[in-house]
Image (cartoon, rainbow, N blue to C red; front, side, top):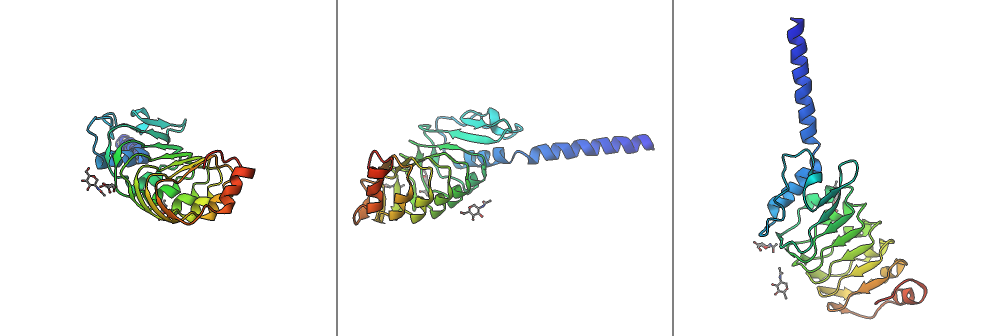
Length: 219
Ligand SMILES: *[C@@H]1O[C@H](CO)[C@@H](O)[C@H](O)[C@H]1NC(C)=O
Ligand SMILES: *[C@@H]1O[C@H](CO)[C@@H](O)[C@H](O)[C@H]1NC(C)=O
Ligand SMILES: *[C@@H]1O[C@H](CO)[C@@H](O)[C@H](O)[C@H]1NC(C)=O
């Protein structure tokens, strides 16, 4: 009797541990859902196997010592399709490198939740829609390169809150409206490229002063 109870208890504990392991692979589940959304004609995502305990051994994915994803490196990979909003839940992500693909759809507003993000490289794709205001919350961001896409609408004033930003490259889109003076708050800015859009008005003096008193080397 006691023996059967014990065996049942051990079995139950084992099942619970398995269930916990499976449910802990949140980041792997998110990336696998993204894989399913993408067209991958060159099979660069072949190693993205959802049955592994975490995505840390997958090609093009880098984790920290806690097995949490810090980099996704898929520039020039021939990928098509759109970004899933759940990417915004990769909470330790520092580098999202998806440049020079054929990605389309909008930039998810949820990317504004990636508070550890250092580099957002989405340039040379087919992204359309507006630049989400929420991206102004990426306080550690140093590189925002969204150039050569089909982005429309205005440059969000909120981008002036990106006080670690070194490069803001938004050229070759269909952005309209005036250049927000708030960008003059970014004292760390070294490169600001906004050419080949449909912007109107003049360059705000707060931005011009970055050339004189800040670090801005290229405008
Ligand atoms: C993105 O491209 C794919 C095929 O390349 C197409 O089926 C899909 O409709 C496009 N989506 C958007 C939002 O443009
Ligand atoms: C992430 O961002 C979106 C839109 O900016 C927001 O609605 C959502 O509540 C945020 N949090 C999580 C955990 O997704
Ligand atoms: C992007 O803009 C170009 C040029 O106007 C256009 O030919 C192309 O169809 C657009 N692509 C998308 C995905 O909106």
